[in-house]
Length: 425
Image (cartoon, rainbow, N blue to C red; front, side, top):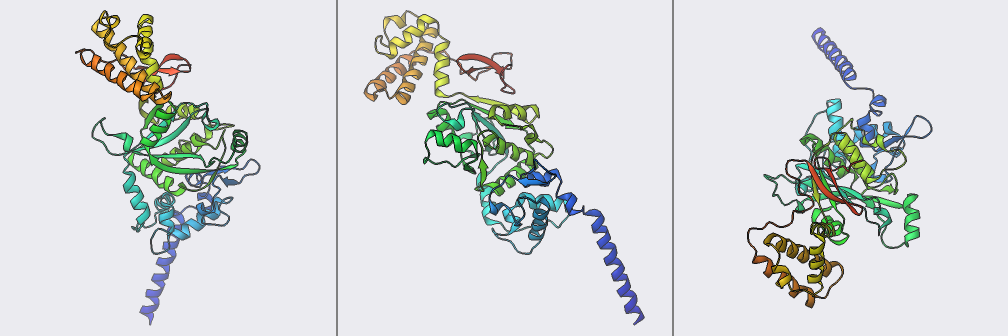
């Protein structure tokens, strides 16, 4: 009997010690709910009045607590309870909120047991992401929502060299789900005052290039981010949490650029890119903020067809520009005496610029195929007869011995820093 009592006493003492140890290791939940990482994961921002927080997520499916939108503490308690429940499957909290789960387990030293999440695992496998690239599409004045440009993230797969076909990579973007039901005036009004839901979507990069570069003729800047493997995992986990969730869309602040900054803040805690946003978040400004935070390790410029043709023509002397126009309009033949009188290099560059111009006009201005197709063929035949002459350098080519690239800004060709892509002040 005495032995049993002693053993029971020892067990109670050990249990009490364990509880005290856990209390010392685990921070108070109220304090933890104000941790910047938890606030970022919940998309919480300080209230304008008072000392509370409100999440910018506007979808009930994003919260596990009924008070989650306005109470980071209530959402933390609900999440902590849910992720410790046994089981798994796509509806389990650990599968719905993998970024929250990973952070809480690391912070509170909870067991990191594996869980079966078929949908999330398949999604991650499909994306096959090693690095992340921020892409900036230049302004498009025909659309009020894109007059300041547009940004999205490209999820780059593992690649051994620069020849990896990134057009097949996937992208994450955030945009207003406006449809085509409103006229331009109503579209602008509702966009300014948050009348549209904003949805995070995933789609292939080649579809973006086709829309922005090929159809809308918008130049693309690609900023490869220097995120670690762990940071990439965290970004993707949170992207899963917000995909298809409603965040009211506002043209000037809670727009495409703003939501991507939130993803980067989650990926690298302490970056605090959202703190840069005051009254507006213009995509071009957000690119500068990302560069200023030393998040970019490589920049690639993808000129549109319009920019490429304009640049090629601009490199020709005035008399050769006139000659190229005459060939394109059928006044001079590609093998005419006006061309044979030129040097091989000059003749090759005139033919190159004219060919690209004709192909552009046939696509964008609907030049008749029975005119543009034979002319394009004749231009290629004439060009094939000129050997050992390189084509006109593309607008993204660096000048020898410098880190400058030439791009089109407005109506003028200017130089930018090739390592940052930032226009000179």
